[in-house]
Amino acid sequence: MADRPAGRKRQVHTARVVRTEQLTPHMVRVVLGDAELPGFTAGEWTDHYVKLLFPAPGADYPEPYDLDAIRRDLPRDRWPLQRTYTVRSWDAKARELALDFVVHGESGVAGPWALRARPGEVVRFLGPGGAYAPSPAADWHLLAGDESALPAIAASLERVPDGAVAHVLIEVADAAERQPLAAPEGAAVTWLYRDGRPVGRALVAAVRELDFPPGRAHAFVHGEAGMVKELRRHLRLERQLPREQLSISGYWRLGHDEDGWQSSKKRWNEAVEREQEGAEPPAGLAP
Image 1 (cartoon, rainbow, N blue to C red):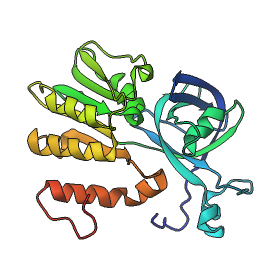
Image 2: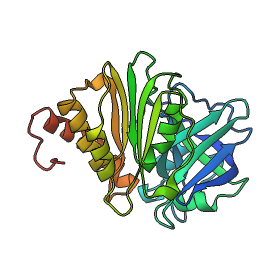
Image 3: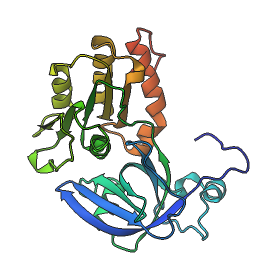
Image 4: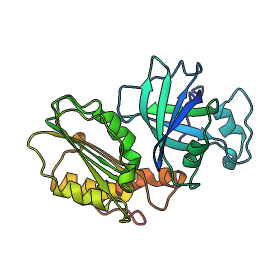
């Protein structure tokens, strides 16, 4: 991570678990709140995200919590683990923040935590970031992704204007992972079930087979990096969608935890763009 200018501190928000909800067999919602969230706000973007800070195993951080001091004074293996999650919703009046977690048993850091989270538990996080919301100037919208993109897709659907044309393609493990969405009139929502097939295969095929409506598109495509790479090539080169009409990125990558993926994500994306613009990627960076 790049050094920050002297005197600038990361704003760490502190909240407490208010409640949890099992949405599907593999998705858990954790609602955070508390009077300690006065400085937090969200709503400009529908892909807002926060970076949860989980203590490193065995670490005990002094109060008041100071992330910059922790990073300055402790070895890297004692730094908090960061895990990025989309803001599913933010209730400014109630001061409640909802985050949805894809959970696969005891695998990972955030998923097992979400399964065990109990009301009153303290949670710290950075953010929010974000950069996408459905453009009211678009003639139609494409929202496509896997489970990791589902919270952002659901939030985006709630901001697509009534009557606007929207094609929504969501790939999940199986029919049990389907959940109700508040879709505006004019939105066509298609659930795609892997049922044991490789991640992304059904979604890539569905986007390729989609009959694109006429006019200016605004597309949001996120999920597993390999799938995103294929769809970026398809949308940019075959469908000829300009970059400014696309929000497209890998939220995760098969075979990598978030630490490994985030450390290589920028170089991966640069290499993919070079390849798809016809340039040779530097040695060692071929996706």
